Length: 104
Image 1 (tube, helix red, strand yellow):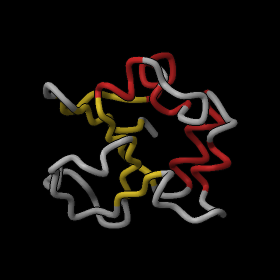
Image 2 (spheres, rainbow, N blue to C red):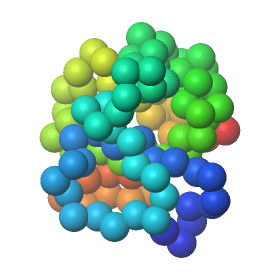
Image 3 (cartoon, rainbow, N blue to C red):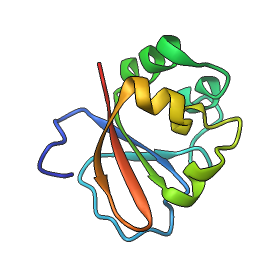
Image 4 (tube, rainbow, N blue to C red):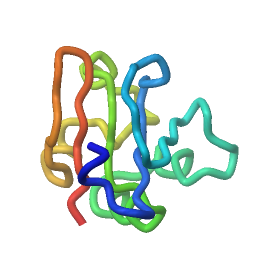
């Protein structure tokens, strides 16, 4: 992933705090974020508005555990299958994780 991330791009992570994955790009997760992060506001959005909010904040990738994607919590709309099918491209998957590039 480090070979395709461009300067200024960020990674949105879901339940990946304990995953051994080395990134050069900034990784932000809801538990490790500040109270005024865009991720908290994004939790109530969907569709194109969600995509716009994330990409305008520099998020280019979604990195999640496959377990978190099985039954996404309501405040993680960016890992719902319908969002990723329409607005994401799978670029990596292994037994435990998946990485999607957000389509701009």
